[in-house]
Length: 343
Ligand SMILES: NC(=O)C1=CN([C@@H]2O[C@H](COP(=O)(O)OP(=O)(O)OC[C@H]3O[C@@H](n4cnc5c(N)ncnc54)[C@H](OP(=O)(O)O)[C@@H]3O)[C@@H](O)[C@H]2O)C=CC1
Ligand SMILES: N[C@@H](CC(=O)OP(=O)(O)O)C(=O)O
Image (cartoon, rainbow, N blue to C red; front, side, top):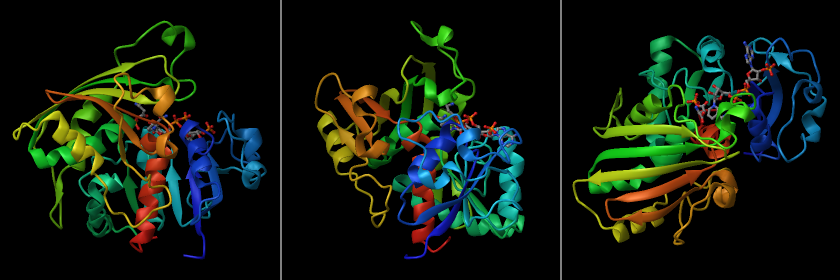
């Protein structure tokens, strides 16, 4: 793996695009070769086009890189990471896949399409097998792989180890950070001193995406898991980090101690991927953890912290929504694809 893989970022100037750049800076396998954004940004140097919002500085290697339009003919890359708005992603990601690019998408556009893998490597790496079906169906030289919605992805790694206890139903209430809506997504006058008990489309995603993630790939299709999920999603005045109160009903009725052991022992073998955290699920013993401000950067933002595991079974999960929930998730998917020889 000495030769670097050329990586493009679609939507490179946005909130998630910036997280992609951060995740790819100094990456041992990927090198940023193209940054693409809207006509507003195309033709400008990256530092002029992007309103950089992260605490780290813009990497020197891309400061003067010219932003190109989101067009397969203008992008030089083997893999493109997509942080585009979902409506636009629907057309454009297909064009890139048709032209032979591997598309690792963070957008919702293709997540629930039958022949498109929706993957969290620690949960359902084998679903990547459906890429062959996708390429046959669509006649594409490239392909699209997606990661879930940021709230789904924080809950999903905690559900996987619960499957051994015959998981039957989930109820979840989220407390989601403002960064999930993008920089201009929620006005400060709306969210300060406040909670907004509605995030458009979020509850539907949380109630359906886990069924695909926890489903079985039978060689030709993904058979969805049979679990009843009910979600209530709320926006809270936190910058980064989605917190979720989860109630899980299981036929085997495990004790809190058994659930805790299952979380701690959940160590999927992905073959040591660069973005993989040492511990996927971190169990906190303190009565008042996890908390977004204290725990969101655990495992470089890729771990999910869990606490308050009680009879019921009830517990609280928390993770970084723009790292584990967005850019880090797509990069981890691409690392797995590379390991499988698919890049
Ligand atoms: N924020 C989050 O926590 C999460 C976001 N997502 C998803 O990731 C995607 C990006 O979100 P986010 O970064 O917050 O969005 P932003 O609005 O911050 O960024 C959008 C990016 O897409 C570009 N873009 C917008 N419209 C067009 C267009 N018509 N043609 C070409 N480029 C365009 C913008 O370019 P320009 O700057 O030139 O306008 C910008 O680079 C969305 O699908 C979102 O749902 C998923 C999970 C979490
Ligand atoms: N809706 C999420 C972020 C998001 O963009 O989700 P999706 O990738 O499913 O569109 C939030 O506001 O926190």
